[in-house]
Structures are given as structure tokens and as C-alpha cells.
Length: 255
Image (tube, rainbow, N blue to C red; front, side, top):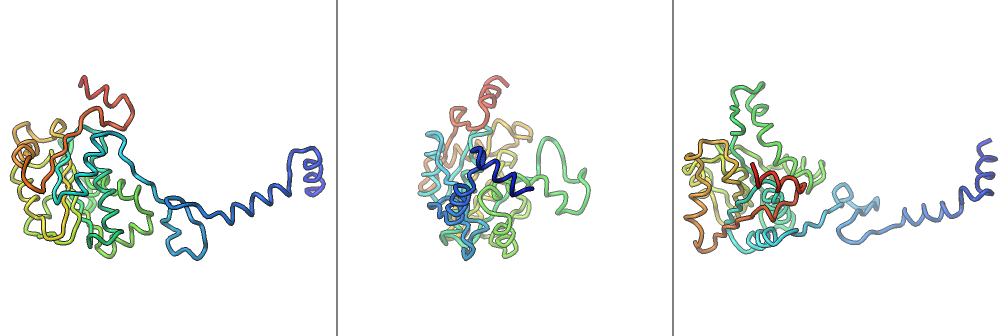
């Protein structure tokens, strides 16, 4: 019955089996150019060979990416949706995969929207997970789950809250400090002085979105003081650099 149905559909021009088989063979033999998916069975990187080529979508983003390439320390200030964290983590992954650094260290303060860790259930790791989730999300967009899991298991990618950074020296590392507007002046100073040899540090934040009391956030003050210091870049993104839904820029303009 199935064969008769197929032949009848083919005769009616509904299904061209030979053409379908030729298309299928072409698809199996397809070798996509760099930046695409390479499904060859002998490709050891086939689980993470789909790579999104990141290009700046605004002048501010272009300046930020260039600053990261040419400075040991970069402070990226700007409103939500300007790609500060995403671009920083993208550059971190590129540096690690190219062998320019030996590890990635990502950190953000465990302070958000007036909540505290004590009100969250579970052990310390469970309490910290919601605060560090945005960093995992950005990493998962650049690495396959298998690759990300392997790098974290080997401690080549480390995600930690700001409170765990004191006393450390981060050599041969790409360091990203996210949501720095929720750090005090003293905390940011402590974080910046973690920078070691052959390392790059990118600090991102939006001074207008701090969850601290207005006078406690130190990001704006630190950025003003460091602007003009050799090998330190301060990039200030604006609403024109927002790449999320257009309503985001409109809302930020009135809220």
C-alpha cells in the first residue's frame, strides 16, 4: 500500500523521489564554511562547531571590542541591553580558545533587587546560583553544553561571587566583573587590584541601575578616576547602543 501511494504521488508530481534522494545525498556531503556547522563524523569538535560570529551593532560596541583587544583593563558603563556583558564574555571565550590566556574568571556581586542570600533556600551553592545565572547564560551562547561542562570541570572557567575574590592574584586570566554598579568603592578597588600578569579585566555595569543606596555604589567614581590612566579604557555606552527590543531604549528614556 505504501509503495503504491508513493508511486501515485510521484506520478502526480507531489513527490519526486529521485530528486529527494539527490538532495539528501548533497546534504550529507555538505561542508559548510568556517563559522557554520560541520557534521562530519570524524570531527572531534562537532559538538561545538557551530560558532556565531559576533560583530558590533553600534559604534559604542565597536569601541568596546577594540578597547578590550588593546587594553589590560576596560570599564564598560552603559544601560541595559547594550551588550556589555555579552561582548566581554565573548572576548573571554575567544582569548581562552586561542590560547591567549589560561583561564576565565567571571564574578558578580550577590546583591540584586533588594534580596539577600539568607532568604534563599539550600546550601551556599544553591543560594548563589540565581545571581550567577546570567553569566552561565552568556557562556552557553558561546560554548556547547559539553564543552562548557568540560572547561568548568577543569577549572578553566570559574564563576564566583565578588566576596570570594579577596586575597587572590589572577595571573594569565581573562577576568569579567559583571553588575559592578552593585559594588561599593572599596569592593571595586579590591577587585581591580586582583589583576595579575598576562591578564585582562573587563568591568561592566550601569550606574543608573544600582540596587545599593545611591551613595554606596562606587562604579561611577572609580570610572571617573581611572579615565585617562595608561592601558585602562573607560567605555561609556548610551541608549543608542541598545540592541534589545526598541521598547527597552524608549522605556529607559522615560523611567
